[in-house]
Image (tube, rainbow, N blue to C red; front, top):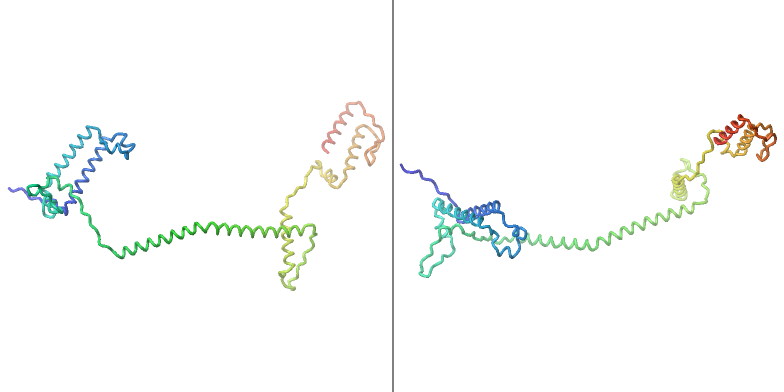
Length: 306
């Protein structure tokens, strides 16, 4: 019984086969670097001329493994070559036909390509036809870029000066307004505030003359009077409301007279205290009894509370 026939692997160009071969070799290199890392000197300074001149893989085991892997890949592609079809031709014939020129030896016979030479086929460089519309668009975009660059440069040169001038003008206006307000305040100091004459509803609205200016000035003074801080000194006048009222109303002399009368009474004196509080008539001798001493102590407490 005849063995079944299998179709060949069809490719479009030799570059497809070269692409597959290059990717497999690159993956094998990555696996080798993973299991056999390069030396630390090559990793630390990969741009060094000395590292480029020397072999980065000084490990003999890694070199041997790489050689074996490359041989295996070559053998695999060489074995699979009869089962590959490139535009109906074998890989070797397709590569030979796609070459721009074939080399000849000294005897004049054609040099047959090696069994793996088709794996290193290079892709041909293709150029698109010149597109005038695309070139015009690129030129327009470059012109727009130049215009925007010029605008940005001009703004960098002029914008700071204009911004500084606008800020200075605004600051000057604010200072003038504050000077005018300060002049009005100084002119109004020392003058008594009179009643503001408000016109009746039937006499019409207030005009833009002196009445409006006077109202505005008085309103400003009222706001300033409200905003002034209170520097009044608050002093305690005593623990009772009557004592506080005497201090406020000016009856301090009466307070002292009452204190002196209390002291004289505690001393068993019968005299009266004069208005000035300078002279006391009557008995002024202090008793030596314990009760009088206690009364004197209580009198001192009363005076302290006052």
